[in-house]
Image 1 (cartoon, rainbow, N blue to C red):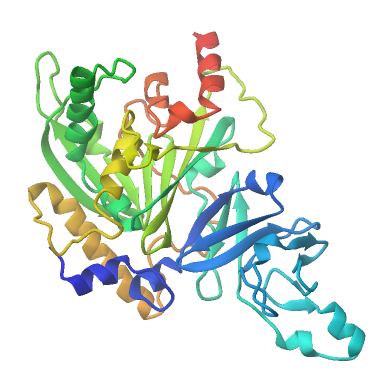
Image 2: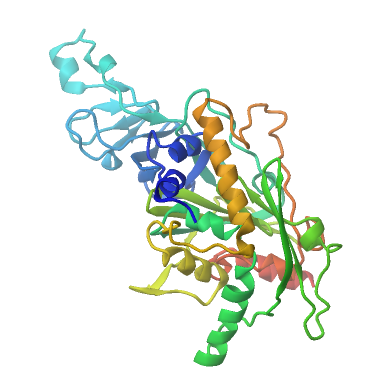
Length: 416
């Protein structure tokens, strides 16, 4: 267990906190680019700061403090102009750095005045990468947006699933360092619901008991490895199988790689997490992926009714487990066991990287060399290498709600 003070150190993400300082050294996805096709501006809350995202008429993205410096009204109701965002209240306009560049009435009264030069609100760098918009709230100079492999693959379909979860980001991420939960939460629990509640709409899960688990650090985070015990006709796995030799990457600080998808656990504030699932769908040999005008965003539901979580699919079960720990888990009351060695390792890594960031150093997965950042290849434990089989392709976190899965499935069916 952790002390209350250490738990706060790991979970508080506001400005000036140790974890907030570390998390501000990374680019975080804050929206799907498709959202700005539907809305001129988007309110954003990231790391405890209230901001507004917009794209001006020149195409420049901006992320600035949400409240106007003049009379403190909400700029998410502002008007994107050719170069900047204009406050709808009195017409003051701010550029993407947060600098005030127009004050219409003030300039009428004082044509040569320099008042606007003294007015600035917070403004942060934003960049778009293959369907997602990323923000950086840390010190200059900003590192490069990591070009992880799934972002730069060609010939694929893409989508983004979104859920806002009422709990701290670390509850979501620590789940990824806990492989043993899969045999109980996703297999035993699912099969219990099928048997007890007659949930024939659910997919039955093969229940496989873990035999051994192990965790290693690698240059991008933590590799989790496992073997499964033999059961019935299932021979199980050994340390010669991909589940151990390749393992499963947890990308520091807040990403899980699942097949050909990324799960991002983005801290909105201390008690809310933006959970984004960015998925790519590879095509069967000889099939060209249809063109996508934009990468679609879809909602992955958390509750079917107030207080009743949607638990008939894998990610829904995970989100239930994260949220029911409370807004911030009481780690001072937990009783850790042998299955929690990955969580202990991850907390230690977080502590080390917080200390490094506090001293002004670059934490892991900070990229500044464009050549080294062109294609950041990760690995996966699934058999078949990077070309995932159709069966594994659809084992998605929330794919049942995706508008893209039926299209990709139809292409696979036609190719068989």
